[in-house]
Image (cartoon, rainbow, N blue to C red; front, side, top):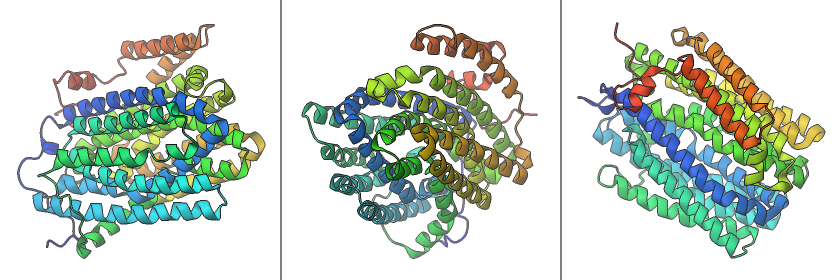
Length: 499
């Protein structure tokens, strides 16, 4: 066996991540992932209104509470293994890739089982109702299948086969929606909805295994040297990724303990909307992660160019999503949750501001991991979560769900600033040009002026978004390379222009 305590040897010969068209594949793959994600949101809009109305404010808050506990366990079970797995798979030879996958699936399954048991124990100690304890146990079973499937998607991500990965995500969404609709029509009680992830996880895991069969080792295996290497590499990433993903889940769990069921339900409704959009920055950075990881070791100039393009796109999308949430909170809450959740509207407007900062958190945090600045990443996320906990504990008793939203927005913004400063201090060569910022600010000001006009909310959002995009186009703020890549004419993102 190769000594995995050292950096794995790079495979010889050409690799998809080194080809001239890599940047174009990243951008087109990212676009596919984004379109797929939007389709998934559309599917969610089919089930979300049915679910919120069927369960009501109190039971919906309980449903989201259990979901948040399971997501916390999922974050811990991942423990940075996806990040490490994609990087390692991108640089290893064929035998190293097979060894990696055998051990990676074994590690993940063990952690998922232990984490699920821990979540159930927490609900018992915290005095949760029996239905929540049982729901957490069922969610833990579904988590095992989900984590195994996520592991088998790593080769698809590392090889930039993002279309297939997107189809598998859509399959999960579609099956989940079908499960919710069937149970609502059947008049099921709360506990039955916790069963959905189990059959869905089995089907999606089977489809993923069939998709990669013959190219990837599917059976788990314990090899001490490989486990030692993976644990050494993942512990810093585990701490950082776990803490970075706990912000909103911590707020939900804290509110279930210190706030009323109604206030928890209002924040939960807003959280479900924000949670849907929080994944967008991760998709953006995740699509480019294999290329950036390789460039970090071999081509600093290529890394800086890719980081600059991601920074520009992050600023553009972050500002637009914050705008859309501020103007469209009322119709969004009305569609997703109904009139009973009207107090969640200002909560969502506040949390929309946090989404803009989330784009920068994902970019700066992901790049810190790429350049192996593990210490700065862990310290920043520890401080961020502690800030979120302190502010939530302080503001929720004063302002309920609004206080939790303010706490999350402040903590996310502070985290973005800290991670950005840490990255640029340790790697000044990555300092991005800020030429995009005044252009986005001007486009945003024009869009806000239109959005504040006395128009129906949906019309205001659409017109404001059109104005925002139009001004950006007039100012040439959208990188031309992106248009070329989407048309299949270039490799924009990760290849710097020749000198």
